[in-house]
Every structure is written in structure tokens, then in C-alpha cells.
Length: 248
Picture 1 (tube, one colour):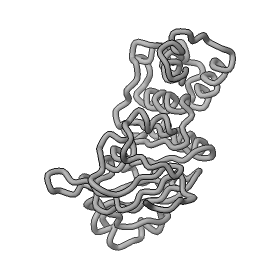
Picture 2 (tube, rainbow, N blue to C red; picture 1 turned 90 degrees about the vertical axis):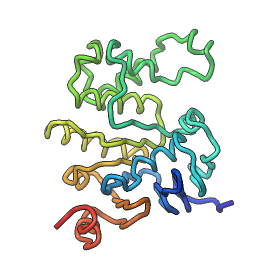
Picture 3 (cartoon, rainbow, N blue to C red; picture 1 turned 180 degrees about the vertical axis):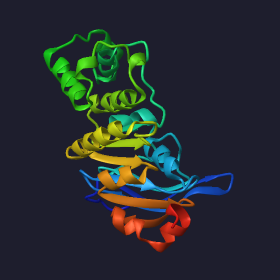
Picture 4 (cartoon, one colour; picture 1 turned 60 degrees about the vertical axis):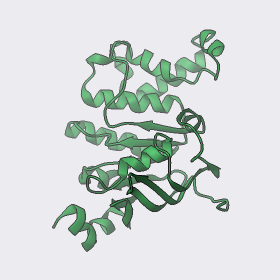
């Protein structure tokens, strides 16, 4: 059993094999509290698989994933969410026919039982929480609008807001600015930096200009292994990274 660690997330010797192919191969990755880490790499590098392993969607073949010194590898997805880990997938999965407010409302942790949900009333602190999150994600004036009428970027923000309502300590985002306008990308960079002042974030991203704006540390994956870790400048100037991923 690995010893206790001060890291929020400690991944050690993590491996997952699919029919003999190691999608993630003896990975060691450590995330600090309040850190914004971006994972980059070519297609097939194992980036999304790492998020699948942390969230419990995929089970590890071997290795350890500890979050606040609690081992996650034996837990189910909903148990991992309750530990304080939230995840957003690449395609927004919001409730199109519900309003922005209702989307945020449905994500609110009422309690763990059906009866708690049935007996739920819109308490003052609940409305205040949703209003605060809506302001953070730039949707204050759109709370009564059906989510299907939002722009693509606004839908991405709404889904981030749905995670924030749950108040996780670790948020994982898969290509959060894909399909956004330049203005929306800039706003998202500010939003994520603000979120990172209160919690940890892991982001998978291909937009290098965006990565340069937000990342504390960058991890480059290649063939399921870490190729390089460091600041964006260190990664960008690494000859091996240029050959494998960024190009000259």
C-alpha cells in the first residue's frame, strides 16, 4: 500500500490494457491542491483514458489512484463523484428542454436519498448558490432561457456550472474550448483561472494558445507514458515534444 501523500491526487504505476495494448503504461502523475494541470499529446496518447480511470469509467489493470489519500481504483463512478471529483466530457451533456436555472438546480446535491430529493424546497441558500454560479459562468441574464437556445460556448459554460454547483475539489474537463469563438475562449480562460483559485483542475486540450494562457503545469502524454512535464515554455521548447507532437 502506498504511503500517505500531501498531493490531492496521486497516481502511481497506473496501467490499463485493452487486449494486450497498454493505453496507459505505468503512469505516475501528481496533482497539487489548487493546481491547474493541462494534459496534451497526440491522438491515441491515452489522455481521455486517464480521465476515464480517475472517474471510474474504466478500471485499471494495475496501479494506484489516490484522492485525498483514499484509494479510488475499487470504487464505482457515483462513489468517486461523492468523494468530490467532477468531470465534464467533450460534448456538452445538458438538458436542452430545461432552463439554465433548472439545469443548475438538477445538479444540486440535495442529499443522498430519494426522500431528500422529493422533499426538496428551493431554500434561500440554494438559490443564492445557483445565482453565484450563474454569475461565474456568464449566464446570469439567461437563467430563464431554455438551454437549447444557448450558443455552443454557453452550453459548455453551463456544464461547467453544473459541476461547480456540486462543489467538487477536483474538476476534470475534456477539451472545454472546442468549437468556441475567440472571445468565448478568452472568457473561459479567465473562468478556469478563477475556478483554480478554489479547487484543482485537470484539462485535456489541443489548443496550445489556450493552454499557454491557463496552465500551471503541462503534462505531455505519448503512447500511454509521460513524455515531458513542465511549464508551457519548457514543454514547447523540448525537442522530443516538438518531434512527437507540436512539430517544428
